[in-house]
Length: 129
Image (cartoon, rainbow, N blue to C red; front, side, top):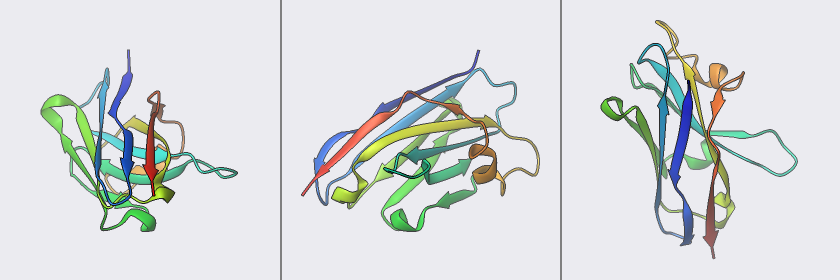
């Protein structure tokens, strides 16, 4: 049974940092596409940061480049989103997404996770000015 479980989040002042964690289990193979999305009012859920857990290829939204960093610990089936220099505009519900990946998928993770991934329950990030 696939499970995607997030932790972290919370409230912080502008300029502060937070770290989100996401553990995905129950997949047949170790290689996965995993990433973080956030809700945007009136729009589709926005991809924030994506990683292929096998090759380590990453992909970031322009709005978070240089501030957010995604990494993985395959021994724990966990990915992390380190969020620095947080801005009030980063205040959102953040969701972890995960999907099985196969050989050659390292550059397709954004497309794979934009299709029908497995979702976590979401965690709130609030940044006050």
